[in-house]
Image (tube, rainbow, N blue to C red; front, top):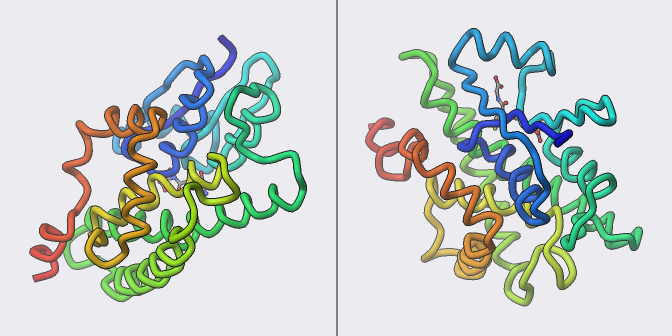
Amino acid sequence: MSLTLYFHPLSNFCQKALIALYENGTPFKPHLVDLGDEKQRTEFKKIWPVGKFPVLRDDANGKTIPESSMVIEYLDVHFPGKTKFVPADAELARQVRQSDRFYDWNMNLQTQKIVTDRFRPAGESDSIGVEQARTLMQTALGIVDKEMAAKTWAVGDVFSMADCAAAPALFYANMVMPFADTHKNAAKYLDRLMQRPSYARALAEAKPYLSLVPTASNEGAKRG
Ligand SMILES: N[C@@H](CCC(=O)N[C@@H](CS)C(=O)NCC(=O)O)C(=O)O
């Protein structure tokens, strides 16, 4: 087996990569990294000095691939399977990449901001940044809700890299800012994503860590 994924099951960006690996049953060695453990962080930085995961290492090709979207594109090219993550058609491929960027920038990074703010030392939280993240997520949710009124998956008729990005984006957005009552189309799309076996498996593996995520109620309590 030539592939190793450096990851943590709770991380939204890592879940993106896991979905792609599970979609096609691609064999890989899971290497869980606890970034809170100084020794593990140091070891991981020897693989990828930036220190952000997911990172895919392909020993057979001598390649190290950081960035969740690049991991998925790499798998698509070198380990193709029944799910094609980026369509062959150039315009559809552009739409998939655009949607992937949309979910990463407007939702995945924003939930990351809200969640990680909680772990800052007392008195050093960035309340303005967190409010900006919430506002941006509300705007993004409105766009998703409108778009998903008539669609099953993010782009075209089939599951793609954009859906890999959307799954953790909407899952964590719903934890920190529940939207089932206000954005029904987005909520139905999240249901479909959670029923997809690849994401159901990634979520089951994240479950033991989910209590670390601030939900709408306990974040509210924290903000007083
Ligand atoms: N653009 C990157 C973002 C990766 C990222 O932000 N990963 C987070 C976990 S969700 C991380 O490794 N954070 C550790 C740190 O910043 O120290 C991707 O798509 O993979």
